[in-house]
Length: 59
Image (cartoon, rainbow, N blue to C red):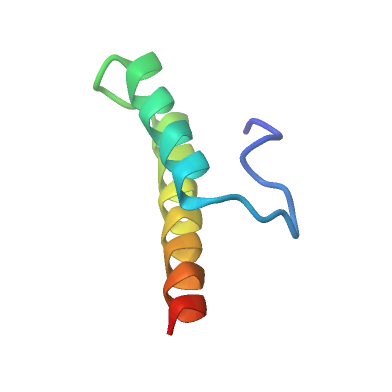
């Protein structure tokens, strides 16, 4: 797994994570390998957490 995918305590914006998701799909050509699927799932969880953090702050 790429070191830039898991950085404990790091705070990245949803936009940054979304950009990584897009880049992953672009590199994969629309079909993810098992390892890429794991990376994708991790990124989606991180993206959701970033979105939740933004919504909580706005409330």
